[in-house]
Amino acid sequence: MYVNCQDEFLGEVLLTASAKQTMFWEGQDSAYIFQLRSGIVRGVTISEDGERQILAFFFAGDHIGLPITQSYRFSAEAVTDVTYVRQTRGHWNYALAESCLKDGSMLRCIGAEQDPIYRRGMLLGRQGAVTRMAAFLCSIIDRLPQDGVQFDLPISQQDIADYLALTPETVCRSLKRLKQSDIIAMPAHNRLVIHDRDALERAAQSRATCS
Amino acid sequence: MYVNCQDEFLGEVLLTASAKQTMFWEGQDSAYIFQLRSGIVRGVTISEDGERQILAFFFAGDHIGLPITQSYRFSAEAVTDVTYVRQTRGHWNYALAESCLKDGSMLRCIGAEQDPIYRRGMLLGRQGAVTRMAAFLCSIIDRLPQDGVQFDLPISQQDIADYLALTPETVCRSLKRLKQSDIIAMPAHNRLVIHDRDALERAAQSRATCS
DNA sequence: ACCTCTAATTGATCCTAATCAAGATCATCA
DNA sequence: TGATGATCTTGATTAGGATCAATTAGAGGT
Image 1 (cartoon, rainbow over the protein chains, first blue to last red):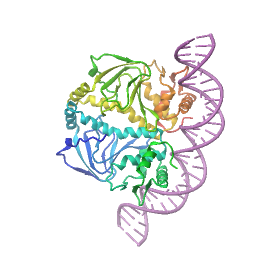
Image 2 (cartoon, each protein chain N blue to C red):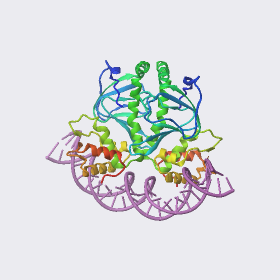
Image 3 (cartoon, chains in turn cyan, purple, orange, blue):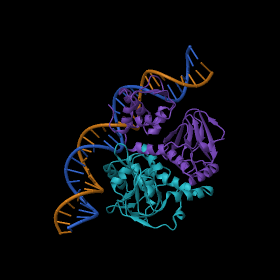
Image 4 (cartoon, rainbow over the protein chains, first blue to last red):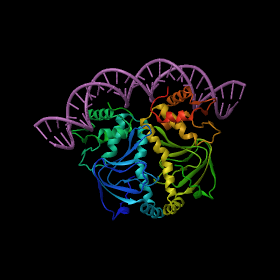
């Protein structure tokens, strides 16, 4: 599902944003298309009742803000310090047009941006808290730079809660249950060790609560 | 958000499918792009744990199966008898390329197909059963052919449940509560009357349960 | 090192929707 | 028309997460 369209950004200037900065706002005219080069970005939207929701987390290589709507559908906020490149919509549309006449690969970049939002929707409906937590961990493991099975988790529990549509308390308790099941460990603050990747993936699929 | 790309299908043959027929299957190579001309279609996917979910309902004018992924991301099943036209992916890509060089309007067709799936994801996380039910009704009112405020609801409660991620029992009880609040009425089986559209929209936005 | 503020943790209770179970209504077809 | 199966409805109970409340741990700054 991850599609490489880096060529389209060759020659662009590498830009930076520091943690908590907003790269673009929901509702703004989508003038630029972004590609993240390092760091983590969250896609945030405020629903009508004022609740904050995180639709997706983006990682190095991901495209953000593809112009399938006139305006951005979510705000993009840097979770960590990030580097990225960007391109005007006109430029991107032109490249897309060329791609469509050839292999349509750039069209699949759109699918790649939509995919995590899709999966989130499917997750929220039916699954319990521990399952959601496990699915979240599975989805980010391969996207974070990591040394074996141990890595830093630079995403706050509040952010995880807004992503999984849970309360921070429930996020904390779900992590605890995964620890108690010896599937993961947290030897230090924000430090995560995956003890049993298979068990984690099983927990992410079945509705059954892990005791 | 509803985008008119009908021109792209001019000259195509009008096809039909009867209720419960499947137009295409999840995972199948997305060889065709569809435009619904009449009737209702449901976008169905089976999650890893075997649960059926309905990602979206499609109505007259909607485009289905746009090729942002190599294969279809959901199955398209006719809820009622439907008429539709279709077009090969190659043909559609060619038209998209042209559109990209002009106004990019066809790109927005993709946004329009994704939009309801987007909204569903946002709804599922935070809102209670009655709110989801009200939001569902609001979203279909303007899309069904109706005579004033009264119309037939040709979607089963089981389908609504799979769309809203509720049980059929809860769907039934949510409808009951909207009836008790005099917001809607159901004078006959599958027949719906909207008594108070404003109240319905308020119920769809606030988390507050309507008494 | 200390102070301050924010994030994470834990416990007790409440509330909503799921679940289980049973009946009523509707649709289809012989 | 009557029989049969699916859909809808209603009730009783249960389970899981939200909520409220309080404490602990960590990060940033002076």
